[in-house]
Image (cartoon, rainbow, N blue to C red; front, side):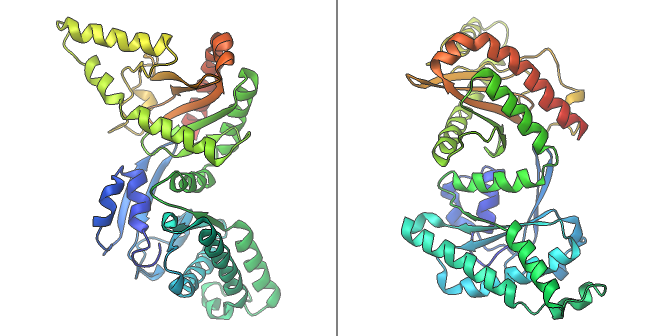
Length: 369
């Protein structure tokens, strides 16, 4: 949700539909609700709503939604107050219907402002939201919940304090990693299995001598879980950029793999690709087999999956002392890790042994959800 031309469609389509950033200026104004179905660590349905959309126009109960993301244009500082008033009204109504609902504000198009202006606008939006929550006429919503006395000051303060403590503000841009990082936090907030997956990643990272581990959604580049050690924006941007660039070449190897058996040149090139993947840390080879195409997968992907087929793997030496490695876990998910090059060279066997149990653990959690 959000105001007109705030970037509601672009924050969805550039991430979950892989629309090129260069096409964003040609997006028209959203005229009706568009529903985007997306399969990742769990099935998602994202609703892209028009700017004049009202909650009463929903086709389903408001309580059926888990999260509301409200998009604001950071450039439109003259219209902050109107947009925030509308968001606060939506947030309180939704909270009354579903107290467990989560809320995020994407303060979008941040790339056009300097760092100082971004900080000032970010603080101003937070301040105004806090003030509007305190001054909101809660008694006007009495019909939403007749059993709660919204005229009571203590009740009003309790609602305002709870919403402020749980509300997330994210400065985003389609031109850098901030947008995917914001969506990562939104999706992680919806994952009931997140603590179990993070515990597995942390144990794997510590026992294998890794620096950082990230579980990615392959198509969108969104981080689904991390080990939460030494995390910083620079490292996340580096890993996300690596995944994006690496996957651009995935189809090249896929096409070579599907060459007819009689074409020896294709077989030789494919063999070289596998050799680079398994033996050359400085290369960008791919070891990809059946089951890595994440388009058109059935809901029970594990039922038709070949358990003996190898998944996509790759490792690259970024700098003399840093190596980045990738292992695919499911048609939708891949693990990317950062570690010291000497650790990779001396402990590779142990790392890949530990990885077997990590992959089994993550897949079992997903099957049982």
